[in-house]
Length: 305
Image (cartoon, rainbow, N blue to C red; front, side):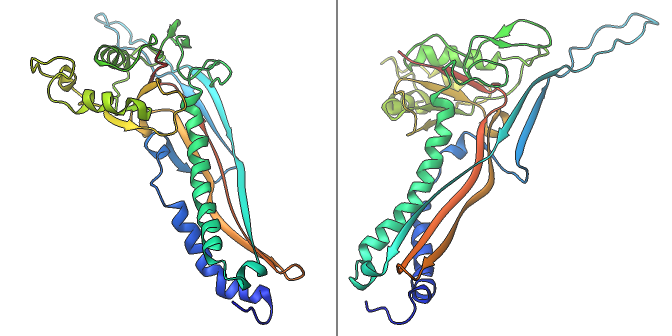
């Protein structure tokens, strides 16, 4: 294609509308996975802060004529999320336009949108990929999945870390029991249902058998699948492509019932500029976000073997 006149005008009026549409197609090529795990919210602040509160204890019997007892919540651990900006840009020179390299131009810009979505997914997955590492601690000073989460009102510790075991009927039963028995810092049960069984693609098939079979998949005598008897229903299988450890797996509550959070200070957007001296047009994509966890409640993890 022969470019006549000012390249900036040509880029802005002729190329740019189509390139933005191509970028958008790349960004939306696959539905996001991390939104099934994280409670995603907008942010209008430079930072987001949380402070845990324990809740009050149980009611006590009052003797005849006696005074009612008092109780107060205890302030727990604080967490701060500071947003970070991310971005990437691709150039389009006048040479590739005049050489009619439209497939190259299309591929570059579609890949820009895809890369934005992929970066967000990989970044989000780091929370579960580092869930067992003492190098990545949360507000209570231990890993997301740990045997030493402090119960800061009643004292002692609580575990959401299962003994290492591959995903099977027995290990999933133990994890479901541990999930249901989680307590608040004041000692009461959390009453939160396990919504997701999260596993790596290598565990897709055993996960499907465990969560979707009406019969017990571990026996040929057509016994009822005991997991179907859970009062809160069967957790839904979620095959998470971005888990890096093939044998690790997790139970999580609904995103709004966990402390797994993602904040979009600025959702992905594009901005363009040109240089008439070099006859290069550039379109960049940026976003600003923070993510992590402010509470381990509603998560149980197993590293596998």
